[in-house]
Image (cartoon, rainbow over all chains, first blue to last red; front, side, top):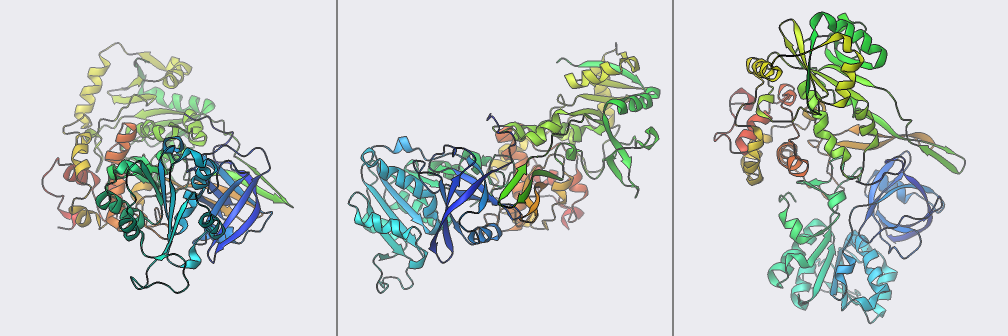
Length: 281
Length: 350
């Protein structure tokens, strides 16, 4: 059992230190803790963030724990996220967390890492990716495949440019093919869904783990491709699941898949676990 | 603790009720202004309804209110003040509550006390003493005889026998209650368990095979059964089954108020509703039968897999109040492989 803070559901207040426009619909908020030290967290965990009078929503912690404060990346898709998009520097938001489990960072050491992000699904990978790059010598090859529908939907564009200039991380950017096989004029990356890229480049399963997050359909197709076409074992694939949550504490029943509480047993899962769930999704 | 047995003469129940009101916030079955049976606060002993019938709403609200404040907030200039609710120190006595409602608390305690401790729920739970009254006859739609839920967490159970109640005391809270009013209780010297068994056989509440626990192995194989779509798609997602249910505990967290002042609150919610899992770009349970299936499997597979007991006490309210007459017991029997033929008859529109 976990020792509770004084009131389990009373959040801390954190201040918006900076707002970064990522895409026309996505912003990153850098949050600062002023009422005490920032809680320790691990890559892959999430929090319940809110605005009083509007409500709470679940966001992954999108920055590495080594940095001050924490970042969340928010796509404007609903009531709470819209209110976040209207925030300015200096505003106060509520925070409960960190909640959930995390990526097995130490277990990844010495291995080749292949990150596969899709759309806003790059956010849960970002903290881990940076943590690995900060300790680059702990890992063998590090590669990133990042796919979005359109070029304007790439989040963390400045960081992608930085990665492209480094020689210790391989970067493949991809956009949804409007016309399969046709390159998009002026686009520096590939024009393809992710599975054909995997099947063309064939990253070998030897000593490699794949860490992926994106739309459920992408995760499923990527996993199928890795398992069936490239010879990966389910245990080599890690993902983080998005389910609607309210409490984040294993109580409210909303994020359940079978007897699994995504908020407590996840959000990070090995694909072996995912295959054992009732095939609800 | 080992169970203890006492006799409470029926002519002393009124005195017990009145004296308990000095020490407890006494809740009992009574009629509201419209004549509806409720768990409420009877003005006098004469207003207590001694009936087997269950109120439409279970007793769960005394530990998990339909709405409760989690945080109050107020903005002053550049500052926001926020605090949790004051602890309510209040001993509640649930007097004459049905066993199916009383036993439900022990079942849902599991989810509120694993890992993080849910203080608001557990605080009220710790302050509540259960004085259950056994039914003399099974009620419409109920099936407690088919579920082996533990009753040993119910503080006291009173069995109405000829001229007196046989009171079985099962917890320290129950013992405290009897000790407080010890002059009203007499020692029971006879074979109390034999008397209880005889009473339950006669009432129809003795356990009958096959128990619904035995359906789980079948349910684990039936997730993709084609008949879910046929048998569960009549569900209209109204949620009445979950609101009346003594064990449904899923909740929502919402803000009420403005940016200046208001509260963050917890309210009951239900998995049969379309918005329960809907996300902006993704709806995992995109058909109504999938949402109904979630409710049934949560109760008869997922919850027992995680915590032990079935998430059901067989009270039957979800059958009684379902506007489209879905019968959970029959569906568990069918999908769990206890019966070969799907439920039919009027309840399924045959």
